[in-house]
Image (tube, rainbow, N blue to C red; front, top):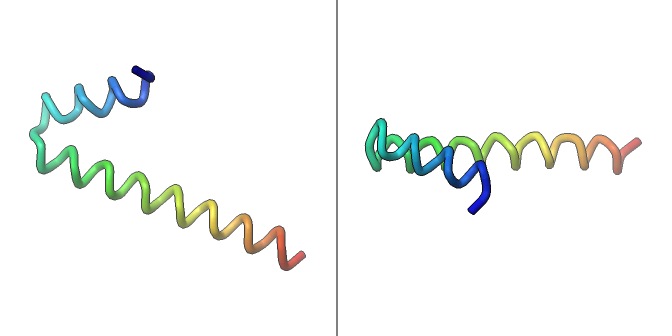
Length: 45
C-alpha cells in the first residue's frame, strides 16, 4: 500500500466517508486539469 493510499484512508477515518470521497474527486480533477493544461501548452508551442 502506497503512502498516498494510507494518507487517504486516514483522512476518511478522521473526517468521514463523504469528506473522503469529496477529497478524492477534487484531487483527481485538479491533477487532470493541470496535466491537460501543460500538455496542451507543450503541444501548441
